[in-house]
Length: 345
Ligand code: SAH
Image (cartoon, rainbow, N blue to C red; front, side, top):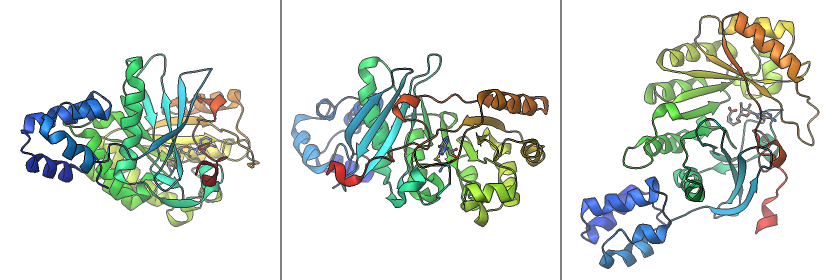
């Protein structure tokens, strides 16, 4: 069925019901900017048009199946069920200082099979549609409204590899930045990737203002390809060229997950320094979120700090990420893994 995210279909309904453009604008604002529930959004339309809009449009395409609020920080994990009974996750972060952010999924499962990532263990089911990508934000905004909050930052760091669902993710970016819809500036959106050079180039050309995050995790080819099978297909050298191009446009973030004895030694530091030399990037050192079934271990905090200090001394803009929502398994790479789709049918 047609969803509210199908703007052509909405326009058709408008014409058929002779709704004035400014009334449709009120309707769109109610849904996407003011995060009203759909019944009150319908109330912005002329009475005669309401039933046609109600019958002709699906107002939400995901169903909130579970909500877990962290007791230690401002994170909430939301599990949504798709129409075909799959589960995806979004994570809301409410940092004390700073803007409310959402980490959203772009696929059901993931085909990249990174060895440290719990999503990879689920295998790949399918791409999310544009409507499913956006509905994570619309529904969350509605949930946040009573708190007086709304989503100000969107990161594509949930389940899936966004650049392997490029068409839908790109269209979702268009919607997010559309002043008539979500009206977010590009610098409030980050797309995170395992590193697919052609797709990164296209992304940079089309969305120079949107931030790009590369999950690098090692600057040593043999180590990286042990951690991330995709690295065999897209070697580090090739990715470096795309990073240079992307960094000329805007902020590029390097995500570096720190794994004890795997990528946290002196030779790893040196390889990283050499690889990133001359590219203006922001390096984010990430703690490993351990999960059952993985025998990898995270680098202890003191060593992460020391690694970060060395990067700073070498001239890199570096931060240590502290994981939020660890008590609700909301952190990256821990999404959904213990749920089987049958359990919610
Ligand atoms: N596929 C994209 C986005 C999803 S993963 C990508 O790879 O960038 C989002 C981030 O979480 C990536 O940097 C990923 O490497 C990281 N991540 C995955 N599993 C993790 C884990 N167990 N602990 C910490 N970070 C993890």
